[in-house]
Length: 491
Image (cartoon, rainbow, N blue to C red; front, side, top):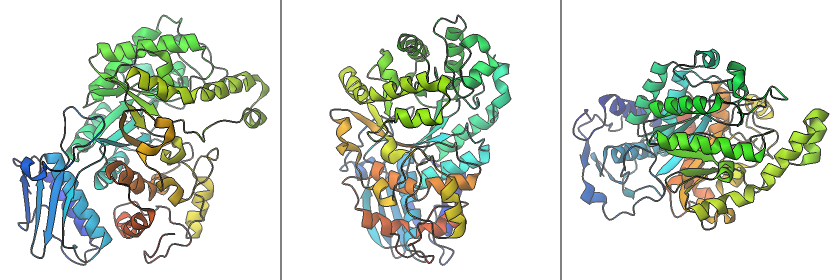
């Protein structure tokens, strides 16, 4: 399929052809996107009868991802309303080849997403992934029809966002301007929007190390926040927002807002208002973690990212047993902050702000696995990788949920669904693969499909993808001990 009126770049078409070959395990040569056997056309009328997607469009313009795919003995026909719809149909073709290797099952598929916003937040601060590794994550998102890569670029440990005029921040920057720009373009070719984040005003230790004039001396190296009474803060915020806006291909930038440990509530609200004002003055729309609704000034054009699930309620006594006495007041403040979390979504509802579902209960993919892994290497990694503060869960427990049935979201307008993977325990790309797969495939299922898919059906279809992951650099994916090495039942 050449780079023509259908808008799919030739390089992307070639990548999907390679994906098909990997999925089929070279047992047959399935008709790839460049084959004359694949009849692709843009035809909005062919998909007009399918339901339109819900939620918030994350990209620069509305995108219709609906498609119709027909697989016959001697041809494949793909009809879509847009270039992105073509990409989603091709991704389904890859999944079909993976699930029935050696052949393409005949059939007629009419398909479209439940939510427009279907994403993954990737922490590139705690582990310095290379640009090539992040591109591999983009490929994975495209394979499972996810539409957003949210890059968490700043935190206490390091600052990864280049900011013009702020060279002192550069010591921790892992990507060049060209690499980030290239990543945005690469993702766009695969139907994925990059959402950059600078997490402020908390999680600011790296920023304070470079610019001590931005806030008070933190009581611990991993704490630190911008100071509401520090004159340098407004200019710094404007510079950071401008850098985010220059990088973001869509209307949104993410300015963080979570866990402002040690920051007085009034100061937090003042700085958050300044961040939002800077975003709006730049002509952009803000995405913020849920605590930021407490600072006010969010508009219905912005998005609140809900992450503190009902299970995420810290135990003050347990935390104090692990922390030095001088940090105990901060522990009390953190517990009080989390105690207010149930009021955040209702506040967003009252303000008409859409809610992006990222509940830590099921969508934080750095949660430990409950079942033993299927080999010694996997079991050793399971013991090491995953945040120990989160109770371990089975694969089924992290799949058996639906975005619109969570009681804490009653009344909310849902923007979409976004998983998150935090990398405090990640030491390599293989560690990332272990945390993401197979759970990310389940997230994609929940974000795309309605009505919800039963676990047994999902389990049966995802198991054969293990061979595809091995062939495309994701071979360190987790598998429970009672799964079969020949891609048998995943229990």
